[in-house]
Length: 221
Image (cartoon, rainbow, N blue to C red; front, side, top):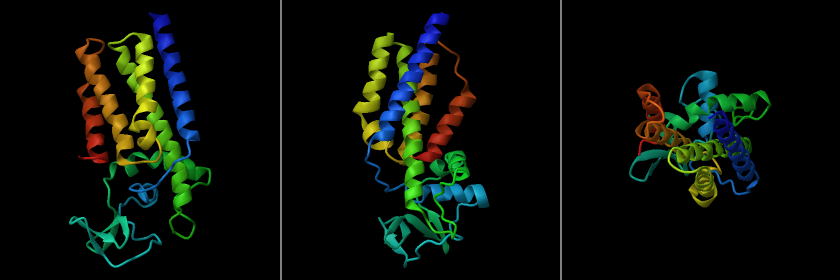
């Protein structure tokens, strides 16, 4: 049993290392919906609010966007609400990313410049690093989920196929789309459910509920 556990642990570490390295060296990192999301993380860490009023951001005339909200002119990622400026997309990703933003800022990489303006290059650096690590972690979760039902070799194949043959590689590992954190949270929840059904471990409803609650705050849809 100990030998099997060591083998599984070593395999998980290898899958994580290979996936994270491959995701990190891949060159396509297009910020879109996630622009300004880590500025929110900085704001939460420093000021404890979601409002971005204190930062030097372009202020355009409000534009009705997608029959849904008032965007900051052409900047659809920012929303006007009651004269305040907010990040439009769900709050889960900025909240969960606060510790990582704090770590990067300790080493001088911040999505906010000293004058309070936005630094998209620094944001991209943090996002691509965090996205690569999150999706590498998901590859390990997929391997662990496979091992509940499949042999070792098949589980490795499934994990690598998911990591490099799906949108986990082409999209979720590139930058912090809402689905990046969401995929990891849902993947962990699926693992817990299958482990319970297969009799491998008892389901902890608090842990499951926490994962699903965060998945909702990351991407309600």
